[in-house]
Length: 232
Ligand SMILES: O=C(CO)[C@@H](O)[C@@H](O)COP(=O)(O)O
Image (tube, rainbow, N blue to C red; front, side, top):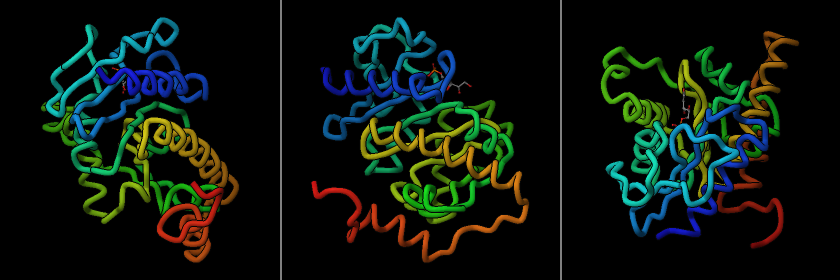
C-alpha cells in the first residue's frame, strides 16, 4: 500500500543528511495521502545508511500503525497534529539543523531581513512559547504539535505562507504541499537562520526589510498573481 509515497518519503528523508541538515538519526520526514487519511513516516532511530523505502511506516490519523514492522518516528504525534490543523500541507520535516536550532534554543523569531527570506516566508519565522511541565510530562509529542498550532492561531498565520516554525528549546519543523517541498523549505530555513544570525553579529540594530519588498518577493512567487518561474 502507498508504495509510491513510501519511495518519495524515503528519498526525502535521505536528503536530510545529504543536504547537511542532520547528523545520525536526528530528523524525520513524512508525507500524507489525504484521500486515504494515511501518513507515511520514517521509522524511529534507524541509521540512514541501512534504511530502505520498505522500512517506511504507514500510520492512520490516530497514530496506529497500519503497515510496517518498525516503530514509527518518535515525533509522529507532532506530525499528526500539524496535518490535522494545516489541511493543505502534504509533507512535514523535523530536523536539528544547526542554525535553526540555535534560534529555537534562543527562543527568538527570525526576522525577515532580505529577499532570500521573503522568497519563502511571508514575515518572521515564529518561535513558539516554552512548553509547560504538564505538557512535557503529558503527551509530549502531541503537545509539541499543539504548541505549534497555537502559535499559528494566535498570530493569525497562514501555514503555507509561513511554512516553518521554531519550537522553543527544541528545533525546527517545516512543511509544504509535498514531502519534497517540505525538505526544500527546511534547507532554506537553515540558510536563512545562518544569514540572520550573522547579520545580527555585524549589527545588533539590524532592521527588518521594507514591507513593500517583502510583499513583492513573496507574492511574485506565491499567491494568485505569482509570476516567478515557468508556467506549470
Ligand atoms: O527530536 C528528536 C530528538 O531530540 C527526534 O526528532 C530525532 O531524534 C528523530 O527521532 P526519530 O528517529 O524520528 O524517532
